Amino acid sequence: MGGFVLVRSYDPLELIPLQFPVDKNLYFVLVNPEFEAPTKKMRAALPKEITMSHHVWNSSQAGALVAAVLQGDLKGFGKALSSDKIVEPRRAPLIPGMDAVKKAALEAGAYGCTISGAGPTAVAVTDNEEKGREIGEKMVEAFMAEGNLKAVAMVKQLDRVGARLVSSISR
Image (tube, rainbow, N blue to C red; front, side, top):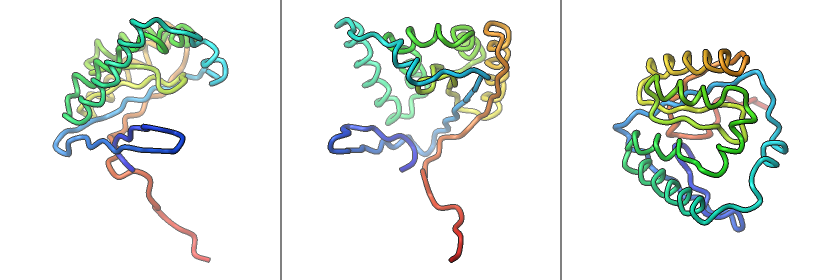
């Protein structure tokens, strides 16, 4: 499955494909710093319990994110992506320069920015590949200036097809 896939359940596995409008462009700016952020350490940083207000907030942002995907609303998508009150506030301080990287991405015109997975990769979103390269440059600069970390940026367009066989070995 390409595009966006919502995992409704893991047991049993239930996936819901979400169709991003074909007439809209979406690019991901991925900036990977030379820094290890072991998943175990990053998970340990998360709170054991959360407040009701943070739960309600993050749940509403998840709903807003899904709506933005279906509507092709890049501003709404970026806003929801950037609005975590549970995970990112705990993990960002463990990635040197992450707050500055997010700020740099948004100031450079990204619709949103957050930590990809457990980190340390930062991901920003835009609707233009060239703009994505500019955003990536600013994010790389911020990792160096504020985190003293070298980083590499890449810009990838939303893959609407998903996993597929690109070549095979004849037997």
